[in-house]
Length: 141
Image (cartoon, rainbow, N blue to C red; front, side, top):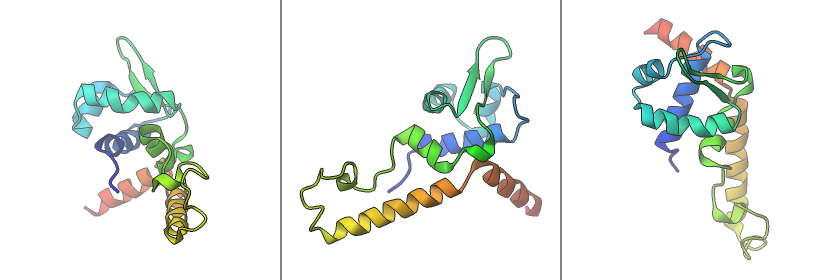
């Protein structure tokens, strides 16, 4: 499984926004330049984040984007689910009883355990933590 390019850029963009003081509007052109993303693609990836309440947008002169929530409150799972929908490792995990083999399939248990582990890890890591890690790494380079 590979996350989409949109999700990768969404995470990078959220980290970039989180590096700015709370409430500061970041210009679209600055995001595009620093994250090496086209304006059209940036708009596409930010739309689900706006809908999910993670990002806000300001139109007009001086308009741009800003985090709608504190960086400590935004997890990697929040961004992934905003961009891609609920994390589901296999079709049998989409809905209980969807697969007639759930009760008998030994692989089902493994898929469920793996999915639950991934969700726990993605929930555990928030954007503030990632910003801090990135700043620490920049000091050593």
